[in-house]
Image (cartoon, rainbow over all chains, first blue to last red; front, side, top):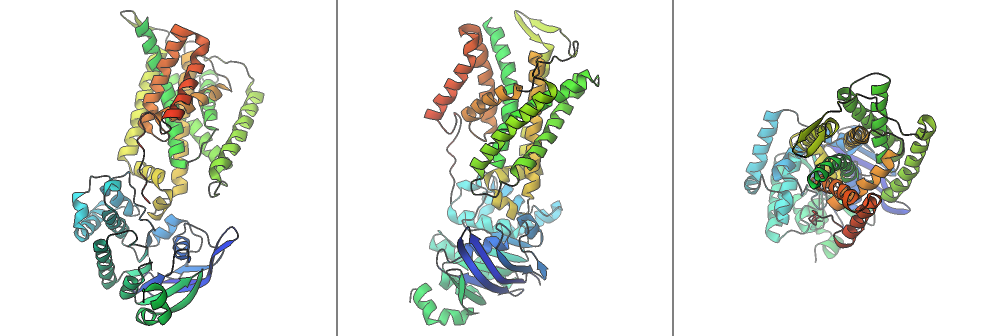
Length: 237
Length: 293
């Protein structure tokens, strides 16, 4: 099993504004770890720094023992760390089939790509009917399925999910979390960022609570879910 | 008379399309307005001039080599001027100013080196024969322009539609960050796009040089103004729009010169530009692209 991630002393700033102020996060191989927090707490900045989309001011990001801090996104992806970014970021003007092909960009073997595509279409049967359609014409829920399917085409060692349930109808939210549950059972290492804290804490093994760029609480997900402050602030208690 | 004007206009327009295609590709993918683009046009023409005059090559070799040389120049200049700006939040305005300064410097160095005079391609480079059909005359140079444009445009469209590189370019044009997350080397793809754009500009330069048999350093500058008209009328980043708008501009220019006044053809082009910006800023054929969050 692989996909172990260690983040130490991560600092991110935009000009003079500090978005993330020295956080440590550890994602053991095969685990699902969630990062919860309010809007603007620094969750997405952290995700973008991990996948190489922005350069942190300080700190170290280590994937399976290799330092990937500040590495270009395509090199991070080549190491098996794949991200489903916030807002899905599917290619709206390309077809569903082209989006999936891009998910397997780093795979050269056509037979292997076909095998993975079959797997993804089995997981998301809805996408099969839409293969030739422009991705932007699908509903939000279908687009999220596509974003997940696209990432799975790369068979990630570590899957980063940034707000996978954002803006989705409740039915789709349940479906997304059911898929995350399945991926977890299959042994994929997952780092999940969510505003829907109750669903995230249910699926995760371990949880971090991020507030104003600082980790204010961490622990096994069940314990974090029982914390009175978390209940009051994030679980609508 | 009118039919002849239309033929001349379409053939002139074909070179405008070719030139504007590279410009719109560069803008669509790299998202910067690169004003040095016109320089690649001049560079292609001068390389072809040198190859034909000094090296004695035929136009069949000078055209592709001039195009490729312009592509290499484009990659080098893009790397030199724009790499440092790409990550800045103000990249769009900064790149406009940097490339404006850059292109003026490039033209003046070129003029100091090669002189401001109009150069001619060697006589007999292309047969002076013409096809005559009814009252219509089409010269060999015009046929070459037509053939080269059809080949280059089809090659570009096929590349975009059917190849792995084309898929990467289309993905990057829409969402560069997401393309990087897929494992696409966006820096390398950008360089390839610069190269392709430079090739198209360079080919346009050779063909225009051949059409008017006049080559001089600032020829890219007046072409650049037409390039703006074409990509704005056709829609920024819209390949098909650039093709149609380029042909239309060629026809309009020739008809204005033939039936109104030769001195007014540029005035008409820019009146169209302003009218389009007022009424349809997304371009004549542009659909309003729906961007979802």
